Amino acid sequence: MTNPENSKPETVAPSAPPPAAARDLENQTPAAGGGGGGGGISNILRRWKREDLIKRGSLVCRGLGLVFSLLAFIIMASNKHGDWRNFDRYEEYRYVLAIAILSTLYTGLQALRQFNELSTGKEILSRQTLARIDFFGDQIVAYLLISAASSAVPLTNRMREGADNIFTDSSAAAISMEFFAFFSLGLSALVSGYKLSNQTYI
Amino acid sequence: MTNPENSKPETVAPSAPPPAAARDLENQTPAAGGGGGGGGISNILRRWKREDLIKRGSLVCRGLGLVFSLLAFIIMASNKHGDWRNFDRYEEYRYVLAIAILSTLYTGLQALRQFNELSTGKEILSRQTLARIDFFGDQIVAYLLISAASSAVPLTNRMREGADNIFTDSSAAAISMEFFAFFSLGLSALVSGYKLSNQTYI
Image (cartoon, rainbow over all chains, first blue to last red):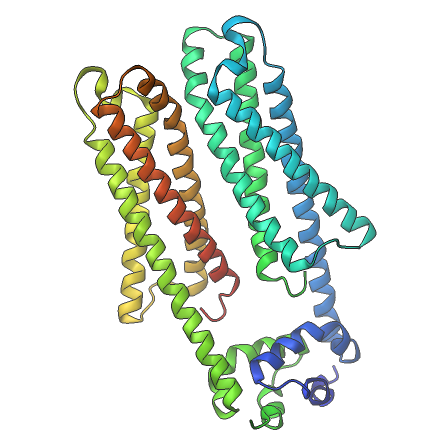
């Protein structure tokens, strides 16, 4: 392997303090490492592969979140069977529906944007803004989802002790879907946190 | 300001590929920057200050989390006023109590460990293990806290529509304390995420 050290001082020289220079050098690797050696290139390839994996993983998480929130929304919204078996008579179920709609909108928009980015390669906002929106958005929606799902569990349990019919079954299904959506978005929040911390090159 | 670039190739030379060299250099700054120049030293000082601020911020978050969980635990555990006004007749309140105990134990142990670290400067486990335990622990306890708090809200609301007495007031207080504990731990999870991503120098 060739030693890439002899070509480095020219690349680094313009910037002043050592830590800043080290950072600049890290950002410049695609250009500087390209003329360097085999070790540099394999490192860059590995980093690209990791970036790609993270982007795809994040898209899969959001896609699953979208599917589960949409299911929760549809199941809960169609859960009207007359008299006391209407979801809108109970504040817990209204909360579940509201958060399912919000989560569907959020994950739908995010998945659309990400898919668009993956296929065209263009980005609408700056990367740092996006990473922040991703991280805080995922986190907040995940908290809202688990809050809504767990607020509706006791009421459903109590109803099922008395009678077990299509209304309680549909409610339980919608709550489960909301839990699954929570797991997807919690995972997505972890991935976004990783992205936010490595925002220089993702 | 002196230009520190002329002393750098000797420091970097032993390590091979450019990205790895950049990382090594970043880790070595306390030694390498000391002989460098004014810019390097001020950078290091700034980094030390930030580290210190983060450590203290994380300790404050955990401390607040401990206080609020302890309050939720005490208020809920002493919430027994006979007949239907005993907290242990309702699964929601039992859940609130269980999570308050768990959160008290977790935040207590973490605050103790952190305080010990700050005063003696010694660490029991490796930093990477600790950063991971911190991040996942904070996140999981935050999710549990919001889940318990929001599961108990509808029951309390319904009871207060009928009668407003010391039992419902204590329940509401315990639930509020659990919400505050959730906010502290959610913030602490953000700080831990930052620490986990920058684990090379914190």
